[in-house]
Image (cartoon, rainbow, N blue to C red; front, side):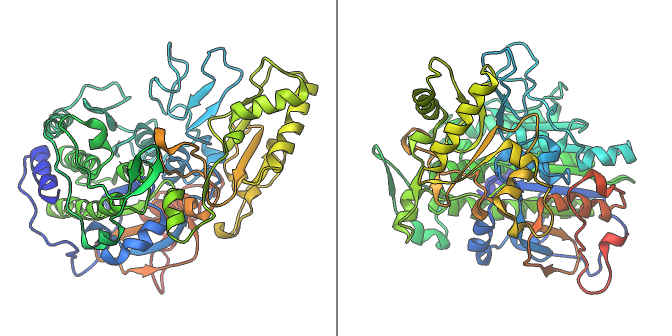
Length: 551
């Protein structure tokens, strides 16, 4: 894979490969603000994964551990999904302020049959629905760092590339110059409506050529050998000992593998070079959403050979990418984090000393709740409860009278609070009445976590929280085997790493938030941001005397 990434980088940029060794740094730190900000989100790269494999890092991830390391960063809100998480990273704001409360929420007042609204969908477009939509950033209520930089200096170039549309859109924002994501076998696409530039066409052609070739699988690093055993999830389906072998033209196999991240980094490196990002008077910014870790985690879990290989390849591919930037002589600053963490499948957890792990009861689904409530209240023939699974936001049908709604809420609370897999059920009213949380995120209550995710126009009437160790995937034989989304720390905790050449490194084990990234980077480039407009705080990246936030 390392050689194939290198070859793809040559193809994308038509320039020779770098020969600089990984981790090579100048003797003194550059003066002034960095010329390029590189903001990387590794989807589902939990603090647990970071900690588990940290001693094995040899490439780009090792380089980043030589900077400012916050191993206990927090996506501090309750709804630890991809879209909300990405909305926090470069806005400085929690989902309660960004408006991105979930990957999908429900608008029961809409006339369209599909009441679900995808976070990166323009549902006003004819024929749009949550599964087949026109991608758009219209639901993001606050500016991104790139948007603020362009306001301060219109010459700033803002680019966002990712494996998923919601990652690229939420990090780039509505004013980005270019936004690209992997749209399918045809390659990278954009919502911006611009003509495909030669670089993207070349990367898409390389992707097509790669897809046309089968893959025999990837080598198993030594640190992954102990994980090489199959785990049954039922129905003849097993996971845990894969190597990412795939047939020719198997796009799904390509997407759920390190190959996807490799191509995203190819596009990012090519965009930096073709647009000469970081080589003009102003500071530019590129955000990069690496999505393969998430696809691997959902498909195979987080503790098999698949996840282990993915992290090792990610480390190597990031190393090649950073070497490429070094060769260009760009003064760049990196921040790397994740949109959320993740949790391994319960079948393997039970084999690995966690016997109480389980899958959610089907009685907790909106369909089952509707049936049970209807039987109790007599409100038959209607969909009383809306939601997209046995956890998270639940919505009570708006066609009911006030008395009927109260009856439905009362019975839903009774049923859910009596269920042995349920930790808590919070009402929208009690969440809305709670002040926005502050202080160390590791000590927040469930109510405070829910408040950080709450938007009065988009959030549910109820929020269902399952107990730790209960996976909200009922049947793993039909799709994903593992997931995230809970208010528990395995899903909330993510690493936050800052790195710039020759910066003095340090590690701070106390909890910080991903919303702290924007004010921290803004201070590095001298961009003022009003504290009243964001939820985060600036992190001082200078160990010892001095304060990078005082610039």
